[in-house]
Structures are given as structure tokens and as C-alpha cells.
Length: 395
Image 1: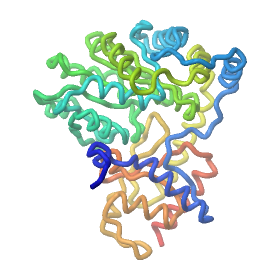
Image 2: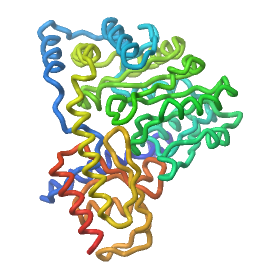
Image 3: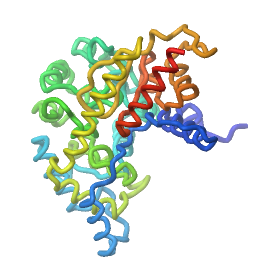
Image 4: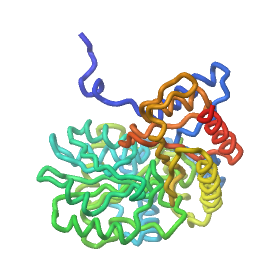
């Protein structure tokens, strides 16, 4: 008899982490793997943030932190929301968690009842679906395509809504497509939602500052959506703080209180030293991290130009985050180097084994025709990786 719960048996393994593990395994065998699978900046955490962390150690921030975050951190996050997003979130509406991933999981657990439906524009971030299922909700996938810049249209949203619809989850800038919803596009989606006042929105804005186009716009900035939106953010991407594990939400107060209650039974407060360091990140003007954003944009332009040279690799022009999400379905049914490619997973594994480049199948993100390639790597690595891919697909 299997002692494990149905809950964990039915849960998918994170494909991004699985690919990273497979790449590490091959590296340990002596293979020269270029990792373009993880969404992790290759920059170091800025010095002013590290200095704040060292100061916190010297000031003996060693005790349990408040479950929902230090009061002065919450005030700093509140000021950040006002400065960057023109959003008025009081400290009582903010919950600090162990990464934005926990923030999202908290929201699923406190909002969803068995059978509640959650609309997911595809592609979506890899963990959304299983978080929803774990909370006994039902993910409802809405397919998008290269032609629509991987964005859900108001008509698609309207068609996906049923009497069981409880929420919509999406990221902008989007992981994995890099697409960014404009103010006008979000307003058109909100026009549909006005008719359904009981539907809530999770707006995942973890890539907010890695934006190469117009100024970031938050769904909660639309007055009628403010009390129906949970804004999720964190410091992993823009501040190169993936291992520090700090995320946060701004939400209606009753939802924030519920997340605090949930977190109090699961992890309690997040790392005390990391929280103190994040205060300095929240107070910093976004111009302090512009050097990273500028470099990501250069890498985007570089990888797109190289992708154009590969037959059958079709890309949109992402305006945020640090991924391309090429449609590679033209390779389905072909045999390369003795291996037949029928799916995006086959294609991604072929690149790992034959080109020694780690990517992630689009199937993990709800899209069966694409793969995700991260350009959070040096320009030299990007050039070498794309050269290997091109050669492997030509041979």
C-alpha cells in the first residue's frame, strides 16, 4: 500500500526544476551544459542590499519575525506600491512571505473551495495549475497564440467564464512568453469583469521592473478592480535576490488577514535578515537596477536575432521578463540524429542531449507548441547556445 497522499501523487513535478536537475546530472558526467532553463538573473545582488543584510546581522535580528512581515518593511512596500504603481495599500493589506511562490499558494488556499474554477490564460507560469489543484480548485486553460502575442482577448475571457468561475490568474510581464499587458488591454479585460462582481484577479507582477516598453500598469490601478485584485510581487527577479526568498501581496484587507492566518500555521514569518535587506530594496529608486534591465534588453535583441536564423523557430517580440517562447511545432514528426520529435518535451530533451542546451518544454506552461528559453545568461553563453541549437537542428 502506498503511504503517500493522493494530493502529492497527483501533483506534477515542476518542469523548470526537473530540467535544471537533469542539466546538473549531465554536468556531473562531464558534459558542457549551457543552462537556459531557469528564470534566475545571473547578476549578483546589489551591494547596498547586501550591506543592509550585514547590518541586520550585526543588529541581532535573530528572533522570529512577525508572521506577515516587519512593520517597517510593510511600510516600505506600501511606499513602493504608491511610488511605482500609484496603488494605496495600507500595511494591514500587505503580507510578506517566503517568496512570491508562497504568496500565490497562500492566496489559492484561502480563496478557493472545491470545484471553484480559475481561468489561466496560456501560457502561464508553471506552478499556477498545481497550486490551484492543491487548493481543490479547477484550472480552466484559455489558449493564446503567437498571433495574439500570447495574450488573452476580452472575447476569450467572456467565453471562459461560468457560474463556477472564482478567479483569474495571470502574470504581466509574463513568464514564460515575456508579453506585457498594456493599460488599454487590461481595461478591456476589466470591462468584461465588471459584469461578474464575484470574480477576483491575481496579478503576478514579479517581473514588473524588467519591462522594455511602456510603463508597467497594474490591474488594481483600475478603480473598479482595486477591491477585487490581489497584487503579487517580490524581489527575486528585478533585484537578483532569488535565494533570499521574499515575496509579498497587496490585497483587500480580509484576504490579507486570511493569508496571514494561513501562513501562521505553515511557515510563520519569513527570514528575518532577508526582510531587513528588502527594506533597502523597497526604498531604492528603480533607476538603481536599470543596469540589469538594460542588459536584459540587449540580450533579448541578441537572442531574437539568433533565433531568426534558425528555420522553423518562430518568436514574438517579448517586451518584458527574460524569456523567449518560440513556436517549434514545425519540427513535430521529424527525425533528427535518429530521434523522432513529436512533442515540445521531445524537442526540449533533444536540445539537452544533442545540443547540450537546457530549455523547458512549453507543455509545462500550458502550451504544447513552444519551448521556453531564458536569456538570463551572458551574451557569450547565448551566442554559443543558439549556435549549438542551430547546428543540432541542421544535422
